[in-house]
Image (cartoon, rainbow, N blue to C red; front, top):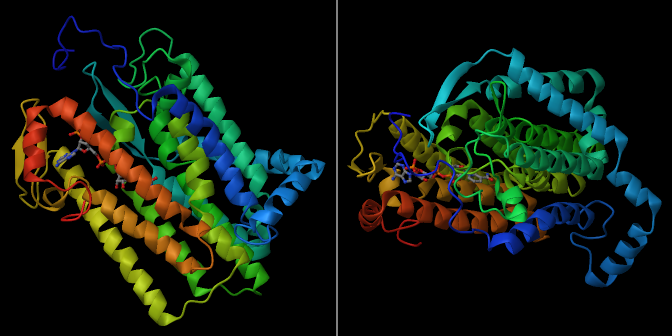
Length: 436
Ligand code: NDP
């Protein structure tokens, strides 16, 4: 505890001083809304929904008919999907345990200690990809369409896992000696369950938060995209459209990049300051794989050919976004780990940390969000302009990142005080240089 910044008589786990997400009502609305929206995006946009979304006048009668049909409810509790999903989760756990990986330590915690992380998400991803490719080569593309065929069941399975984990880690956070998230100890059950009470739930040496962040959801997203491509190829007699290839390539690159750069997540807000509760569980396990794959799922049943010119333009948008995203995240990550290969300028705060003021972090306070947003746009463009639904991701993501930027600014304001004001004067733009 000697090198901790905490004064000796300050409590280690103070009660949270303020609410985010509009407090308990907001937390409850998101807790219920995220699962409902995930189902709605499927039931209002699939090959038998009669449009994407279907016209309003047909929506209510078809919904009423579906709800009164036992087959509809059966689809939600599909035992095959549940067993595949839970086996998948077990596979990720076993891969984490048996595949070799370096152990790295995260940033210093409030109690002066450091959390240790095993870095083998990339090899887990390659193993899953290798096994899936082998399976497809051996049994054909039509054998790998089960995510498409059992979609609603998989959504329920991932949702059940998210709830189980939310409840489990909330309950265990009351055991003595736990380090709580500063924002997750309000005393309100609904809010703390949602936002995450314990900072770093751990089983043996397994860090639950980083494990869920990159493995069972992110890698599953890639497998789901492959399953959507297999479904399209099955319909088109073995052929894939250029739009599906682009989506698969862009999202595959994003996912493999995140897995390969696993240590970079150790300086993100999720890992440094958020507790692990339902918000992160449902985000990692349900929302990422089953909502982010919407474009690929749409193209599976609405194939679209783009042509060279349109494909090249979309490729350019994606690579510009990827370049900004990767170089900015690398600049910060290197810097936080004590390296400054580009000799970027910075300010040293009274608190001890340093803040970059040149390079990408001198252009805006969240250049990485700009890169991410450009990529999000490039993932939706291949679906064309027949429906707004496939642009849901870009719109939702813009709202999420604007809100996240404000949350982070507030956090940094509290942490760095007048040094943050100084930094804001040097770097006035929030996300998009000269615009916002
Ligand atoms: P950042 O990686 O941007 O981390 C913010 C933290 O960086 C701040 O809290 C502060 O931490 C530190 N920091 C801020 N300014 C500076 C500076 N000038 N120099 C050095 N350090 C600084 O935030 P996120 O965790 O939100 O994002 C990580 C990545 O994940 C982004 O690329 C984002 O787009 C992506 N993301 C993707 C999502 C998705 O669903 N696909 C969802 C959310 C994020 P400290 O207190 O340590 O100084």
